[in-house]
Image (cartoon, rainbow over all chains, first blue to last red; front, top):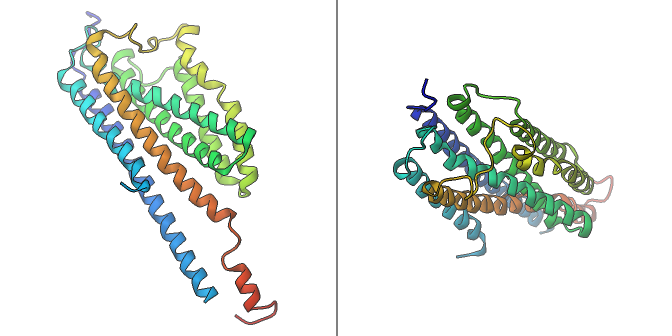
Length: 53
Length: 235
């Protein structure tokens, strides 16, 4: 054994793959949650305007 | 650009930098003498580590600001920063395990750096869970801010653990410990994750603030309903 690592690209791709998946997944989850919160607020606002009219 | 687009622009800039830095690190940076190509994991692992600690430090600052000055904006920012810190902290552990297997021969070791990092991720995950369980916004804000101040004790321990104890984990990556050939992709990715993290915290704080606004508002149409339909009235 020389103590020098050879190969190992599968670990490199795995690390970059996990990173890309987590970064993309969390970004997507933020967008989805923001959109659903906006929709909820719009629904509530329209209900409130129906009640007051 | 409208005010609403800025966090997306900041996150987009972060993503672009990350793509640039990663291509540099994977294709153009030299192979490390002992770890070979596996060392290229450093270009995503180290920026993730720095920014996880930074996000949690920002969360700690927001928690202290909320406790000292009050203000729901600080609570929203606190929640946002803790969540982003936990996401980056968990990612950090997975990247570290993938690096550890070819270099140490194991996916995980109860080494001081790894153990304190795991404690940090679980402690802040617990604070997020606490926030989900407490319905009263005022209690939730105070309790989670106090819990963050306590949990934050672990953050400097994580950073300095490699200096304080004998650790399998290498020392912090700084210009003094990293060869100059590896600096640029590391720096570009560090700024990439920094911008992405800032955009995320910005967006997540906006979401938390909108939810808080809904929670703190009087019940929907309650006053108008009470006026139109006195008690005992039919719907």
